Length: 109
Image 1 (cartoon, rainbow, N blue to C red):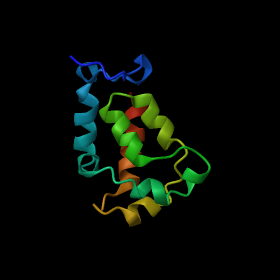
Image 2: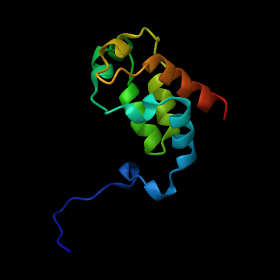
Image 3: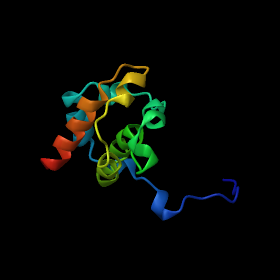
Image 4: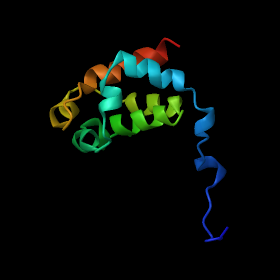
């Protein structure tokens, strides 16, 4: 194996084999938009709260897929549910419902 001098630090390593897939499956059943998202970033670019706080629906979904549930909730905690992200989504995802589904799932745990 060749050594190119690059490596992952332990803090950025994600053990996908250890990720609880139950949360992903439950959220996909609760809202089909969870699997429909293509992570284009339009929602983040249009976010009013994103100027003041770290808010990103795209990154929240990716965090759930990577088993980082706490990070997902942190990214959505400052969402004002204004709906701008829903208007710009190229896939037509009801992001308000998706955000509320995520919050309901993790607050009910």
